[in-house]
Amino acid sequence: MDVEVPHRPVYETPVGPSDRSGAAAVSAKHVEVRYPTHIVWKDATFDVQPGEFVAVIGPNGAGKTTLFRMLLGLHWPSSGALSVFGERPHRGNARIGYVPQRHTIDQETHIECDKLVRLGYPGPRWGPGGRWRPRQWGPRFQLKAEREAAARALADVGASELGHRPLSGLSGGELQRIFLAEALVGDPEMLLLDEPLSNLDIRRSRELVETIHGLVLSRGVTTLLVAHDINPLIKCLDKVIYIANGRVATGRPSEVLTTETLSGLYGVRVEVLRDSRNNIVIVGGEDERGEEGA
Image 1 (cartoon, one colour):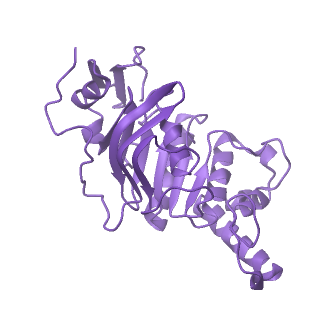
Image 2 (cartoon, rainbow, N blue to C red):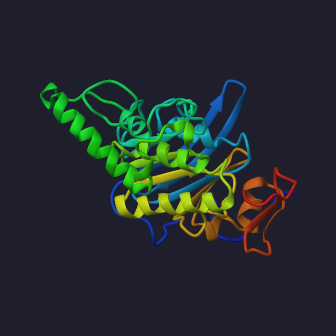
């Protein structure tokens, strides 16, 4: 039995006090996403404003990573309109920094962190995150610019002391900071972070969230972060994009993470509760186990 949602339509994007002026960083209008065997989600309409910190949450297989693939120009909507900074998404967009769920760099390699971060610098070559620059830059200028940008990125993620250490000697939390610095070194306007908290304990998760939130505030970088557990993030967020049951709900956390809204999204009764530590617990929907988080 469908549950009626008693307040504003879930699938409209509410305008909150954290919304910034100017063109939307991401704009989706009646977007449908499909693969050959199934529809992932449909009729999704939402915006992400410049400088917002947004969590993308929902059950496994709901289409969270698919959203990132579309923003990176790796998958196209089957219908509707999607834009990034007012343009059609395209591959190699230097305005976007991306940290995938599974990084292509083998952590057993002995490459120093500083050198890995510098690979993300958009200098006069083709490479990870790279784009062509005029030859008059010259190798000496290029090297200086790379080093300065890498040093700034490492400092901004609290990892300056890790610059000359090999990747193989880092903890999970330290690795995530290095990968974040690599995505940041080209000074992007948007960060896409795919489950950076998945292998971290509670303390390390909260520390990394604080670092990312600091980047949002200091650099004004629009940030979308895929997560299964909303609790380490909730105090820092401007917006939530919740994807489930082939549908997308957006708004402030207090608007989306409610029994009424999620029941409307799933089409069945969903309870949003608080545990003894004041963490959000979602019970029902596609996850009948009642696990902490989303």
